[in-house]
Amino acid sequence: MALTNRYKSAPGAGTLAALILVLVFGSPWYVDWARDNTDADSAGGWFLRLLAWPAWRFDSDDSIQEIFADDLRAILVVVLTFLFLYLLPGSQLARARGTISQFFAGWAAFVFAGAFAALLTTLIRTNPSLLGAFQAAGDGAEYGLFVGWIIGIATLGGYRGRR
Image (tube, rainbow, N blue to C red):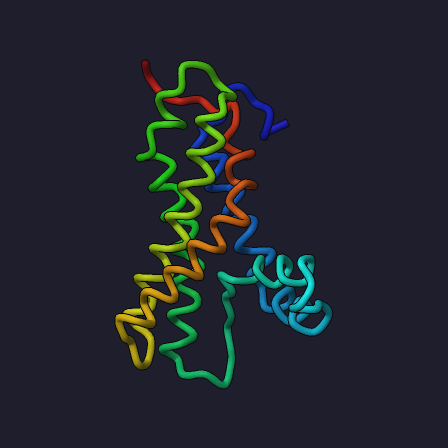
């Protein structure tokens, strides 16, 4: 099984988990389902809607600039997850595989990836503002905080590289 292979890398496993999250829960089909079938005032409905945050889409009534920003945000979440997983020392320098530091490094990498992806893509939106960028970064960090534990679990037991 690929996820239990003792030779998997922590950044690779975390990035694969992030890619699956973004592809499945950011898809237009899931976003529409979550919007139409969940209650935003319940904890479960709120979480199911939060999963759809890095939504990507092909067509909409919005401007091409907005669609491009949303699609780029979804791509940046995955790319920045890999970058932060590679740079954070917990997954690379842990003394033993499967330690709690790998879990928290994966989780933190996803928080940072969500915040920075939102911050960067706010700059290419139709009417960018500093307040809008800060609010978007907060939304991305919120997404990473409540969904990033999945990435943390995926990075557990990953190969850390050379000693």
